[in-house]
Length: 479
Image (cartoon, rainbow, N blue to C red; front, side, top):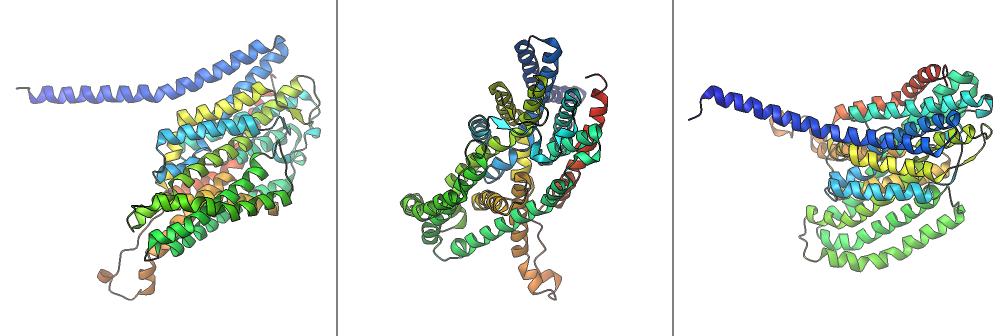
């Protein structure tokens, strides 16, 4: 018979072993990320024989790879998080789909020409010296990447575009003063902090309420689903087709507005007839209960997650490779401020870095977005994904700058607060009833997460800008 003291010692040893294993597992992603950056550094150094140019490009490429890793770790969660939270996708399935479609979007539709300065927020012609310009771009990239790293660590999904915008503004001001900044454009970006989540939240909540009325409040939910799910899938198909034409392929193909509208309307009319037989077949054998009917949204939700990932890869890879491509161009002798071609190896660093960052570090933010803000099922997640596409289309048509991150998270909170409002409706309608007869007020949205994310959004641009300015002053001394 073992002695009590020996049992305690064995338990302590077991806990220490478990802690050591856990610590070792947590170091694996860090080590793989570090190896990726070393690989980028070595590859770039070997590519350029001229050390005076090559070492600058190699350092910039490693920082661009670090930025890409952080985009994958933080921003991609908004595309697949709702599907994971709704149990339509496993974590492994979500990571694989997002990695494949993010890479495809970056490599196929990321574009071979980018502006040297993201979003036209500063005037690069005010930085005549090429070394100063390179220092500013390196500072912007590094500051944005560090800020994203910090945001991922605290569990806050933030906008990578806003991060790089803040980095560029801070470095630009440090290099040439405040007159270099296009403050009107910056004002629109600041306005998007409010516009993006509000639009996403209102549209997602509106779509969810429509689904509730058309399907879940009907006596025969199966028949209602067979009738309306094909229409909702058609709306999704039309919206995502427009989204991809307007945003996903914009760097390689710019169709006219009339063409986009014609394709979208055609799909809206044709798709219901193609999808209805499939929906009817999938509905056979389902019980007339909400949790069974909601499974009909599984496949549309998975498809929407893939399409969002593709569009995200096509658009946001520029946040990593745009400044890097500009550095490569200027270091090679091109003029500051010109449009530059993106070498394939630069695009590959962006696409591979985003996918690797997602695989290594993405699960944390995917869990936050999918499971820790509010409870999601397939229907709610579908409405959030559809709202993201519709919001981007509306904003693009109106010329409003919006953040896909803010839209997606705003959609989640919009659906959550609508559910909370509906759940507490009996309390508001009978406020004078005795407390024991009244239903306890329900909280279906986590307020602490909401406050953390909102605070992170507000400080993203100024924090990245301040950090970028400090980094610029440091590296401009020796670059």
